[in-house]
Length: 181
Image 1 (cartoon, rainbow, N blue to C red):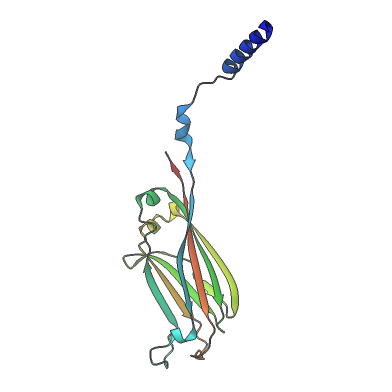
Image 2: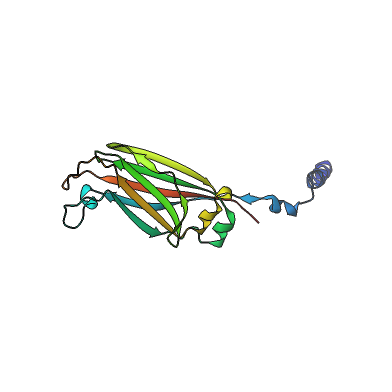
C-alpha cells in the first residue's frame, strides 16, 4: 500500500503544479459586450375611409402621425450604439401604390430620413430593411420622435369610402450595442 500512497502523492503534486499558469486579470479590459435589442417602433392599420375628411367627401392623399421615441435617450445607448436597423412589414390591399416616409425627429426637426418605401397596390407581404451605421449618422442619437407619412398614388380616381381593404404597417428597430468594461 505504501507504493500506491506515494504514487497518489506524486500524481497530486504533478496535477497541481504542472498546469499552473498565472492569472491574467487584465483580460477583462479586452472583453467587448455586444448585446442586440429589438423593439417595436410603430404599428397602424388604415382603411380607405381614413383618407377622407369628416364629411366623407374630400379625399386626402396623405396622412401622417408623429409619436414620441425615447429609446435613444439613454446615456448608455448614446455612448455605445454602433448600428440601428429599421425592419418593416407591410400589407397593401389598396388598388394603388402607397409611399411611406419614415423620419426621425428631434423636437419636430428632422435628424434622419429613411429611404422612401414604395409599395405597389395589392402587395400583401412586403418586407423592407434599412441599416444605419451610427458612426456616419451620429445625429440620429438625438431622436426624440418618429414621424410616419403614408401617401397614396394620385390615380385621379377617388378611393371607395366603403371599401374594406386595409393598409397595414408594422415596424421595429434593432439596436446593436458594443460596450467594454
